[in-house]
Length: 398
Image (cartoon, rainbow, N blue to C red):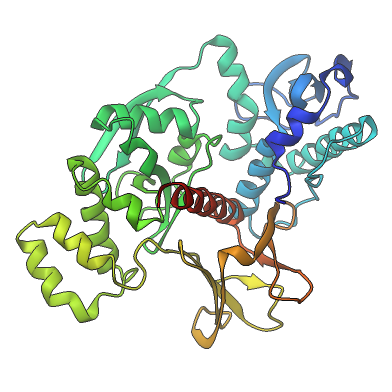
C-alpha cells in the first residue's frame, strides 16, 4: 500500500482541533528590510483549518501557506544559495498529526524563517520576497501578468493570467489559447526547462510566474516554460492519430528528442529523415516508437544509497524503472539495475533530505527501500504516479 499523500493526510485531520485565533510568539528582525517598502520586524503564524499557516508581519498578514509550499521554498532557496548551510525544515509525516506534533511543526517553521531571514541576502532575495508578499497582493487584488510559453512545434504562445495562478490554472489558459480539446489536454503538461538536456514537469500547485521571473535557464530564449507530452503509453498515444494538434505536437517533440539523443534512432535514421522531409507525421511516429528511449524520461545523474561510490542515472518508462550506474561525473558504467513495476511496493518523497524513496520486493526476498538523492524528487514521484495510472488504463482498456 502506498504511503498516503499530504492531501490525503490533511483530509483525515479533524478540523475542530485547529485554533484559528491562537497567535504564536513574534520574532524580531531589527533593521532587516524586506525590499518591498517595510521592515520585517515581527513574524508569526495563525493556524486555521487544513494546516494552512498565515504569516504575519507587524500585525499584517502577508501570505497563507501550506507545509508543502514551505518545502518548495526550502528547495528553491537551497538551489539559489547552494553554498549556504540551511537550517532543518520540519520533516514530512505521512500520517495524521497530533495537536502536539502540529504545534512542533508550527514552531519549527517559525524557527526556520527566523534563521533564514536573518541572513540579509536571503531575506531580501526575490524567492523569499515572492513567498512573503503574495498574499499582500491578493488582499489588494492580484495584477495580471503575461507568460510566454514554448510549444512543441517551436512556436511560442503568450497567455495573460493572475500573478498567483497555479500550474493547473496556467496550463488550462494555454490549452484554451492553442485550441486543445478535452481529450488532448490530458496528454500534455507544463514543464520548466532546466538546461538543454533536461526539463522538469511543474507540480500542480507551483506558481509558474515565480519560475518565469527567476528564469534559472536560458535554454529556451525568452522563457523557461514549455509544453511537452505527458504520456508513457504508446497504445494510448496511437489512439490520438486522428487528432491533428496532438500528432503535430508529438511529431515535433519526437524530432527534437532524436536530435538531442534522447531517442536512439541510428539504425532507422535514413527512413526517418525521409518521412520527416515528406511531413508524414503518423508514419514517422509509428517507426520511432520502436526505438530505444521513446516515451522514456531520463533524470540527471545523482547519488543513491544503494551505491557506495559513484552515481546513478534514473530512467522511467511504461515497461521498467532503471538505475544506470555511472561515475560522479555522469560517465556511464556497465551495471544496470532494472525493476519491473509489479515489484514496486511503496514510494514516497523525503523533502528534508531531497530524495525519492521506493520499496521493492523480489521473489521471497525481504522488501528493500532505496533512496535516490535528486533535487527532482517530486517530479520522480509524479512520474511513478503517472506510470501506475497509465498501467491501470491498460488493464481496463486492453
